[in-house]
Image (cartoon, rainbow, N blue to C red; front, side, top):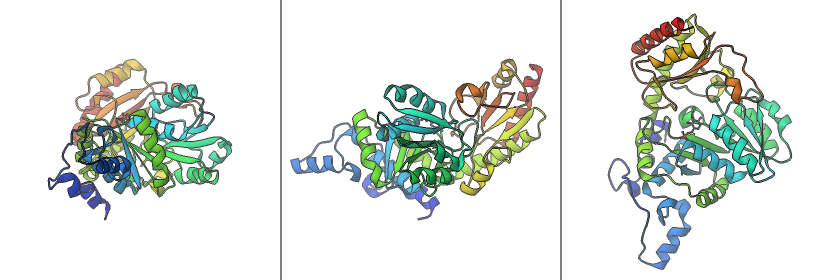
Length: 390
Ligand SMILES: *Cc1c(COP(=O)(O)O)cnc(C)c1O
């Protein structure tokens, strides 16, 4: 099946839907059995959709797992109650005391918090690396390195990593490659084809797509499923059927939403590129974004999320800018149908190896599905407030 067909059809087998178009929401903790044999079979066949107990999955969550597997080209998928839980689940499934992790310096900030705090406490050491390192990552791999954790583009600062080069160096030394592929989505970055072993998504973003549910997933090859399963089982990770339903429902329109987000964001970014206040654009499709050439080589598209760096401006100016917005609402997260804005001062406070050369603040936009003309008027007025408060 081609991708557009998978998006529409996958996870809609009659065994899940009973003929309805969308897989129903199955609310269940307890499941009952007629025979002891049935009960034992259900318990043993978790990977094959056995129904034994609510925490271990139900038809709504199995349908979503199946759809994510088909889209990523994976052999297995586990769901988590948030994207961050998927990250912790993946890492804790494979790292033990005494192990070493290599992590991109521009990862999603809570991922950094996990390794710096909890994993340090558990005796797992992490070294951060420059996201632009490419094949030179080989020099950082130690005898006890277990995982290279990547995210591309990086959160907020948008550097695009050479994942194939990093994966080659990792695999030469038997190191696992994990990737937070939330920005790329299964449509725009084929992570397994580029050498990633475990692919993580915050489904909360474009898959749910409507800013009304939290969910995460890890997709992997069969050889890694048992360890992921054991960790989920021991930690009690599961996803509510209501949120699985919302993720499945959002998934059906993922492709067409992404196309419009990409188009709108590109137009907004082009307009920003001509503004005198803007130092440079950090959108993977722009040459000013570190790793732009890698993005052209490895990705098949962009979306609504990008950043830009201002030439100057303290908090008074960015506060005035953000507080008067009509369409770009101030808020964390992204991937819904609506526009969002955030500003960052002092990026280097959560960098350890790459620093941050730009003098002015960084603005991150999520460009939604509103009309671009209205969005540009909103930004024009934002710059007026910004300049008045410089
Ligand atoms: C939002 C986000 C996450 C975390 O997802 P939650 O569902 O909010 O826990 C992880 N990685 C990236 C890149 C994200 O943007």
